[in-house]
Image 1 (cartoon, rainbow, N blue to C red):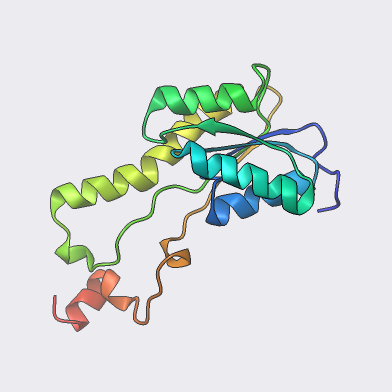
Image 2: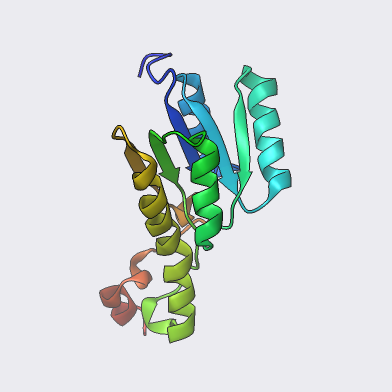
Amino acid sequence: MAPGRLDGLRALVVGGGSGIGYASARLLARDGALVTIAGRTQDRLDAAAARLKEDEGLVARTARCDTLAPADVERAVEIAGDGERLDIGVTVPGGGSFSPVLNYEADQFSREVDMNVRPVFLLIKYGAAAMTGGGSIVASSSTAAVFSLTAPAPASAPGADRHGR
């Protein structure tokens, strides 16, 4: 994408304080978007915004946001859209554990779904409503970006069978 192609577009990156979210925020800002990074830890957001400014002269606003709390996500959308509109929403939810699905307890599975699906739902719910002129929502997640696997097969039911349930 050519620099400046996103000039004037308002973007919210939930999970923008680190990792995939930070990289997404950086690229959107490079392309001219007005970026707001959101996440649970204000110190991490402030450090990420400062790093963008120091390293590349890019400006990013911050919005502290618990992605499991509807009011927080709604407020982050409002901040990013300046009360007018949101054009781009990016969410990089959760994380999780790498264990065979058959080893999960029901409550653990519910926590994993909540951590990884609820943030996407809430951004779609509030972000899409703020996209009065159209827009795009991108959800990306990779626990593999944090953990390394040598044999991912045990995470699947057939893999669990081959690896001794």
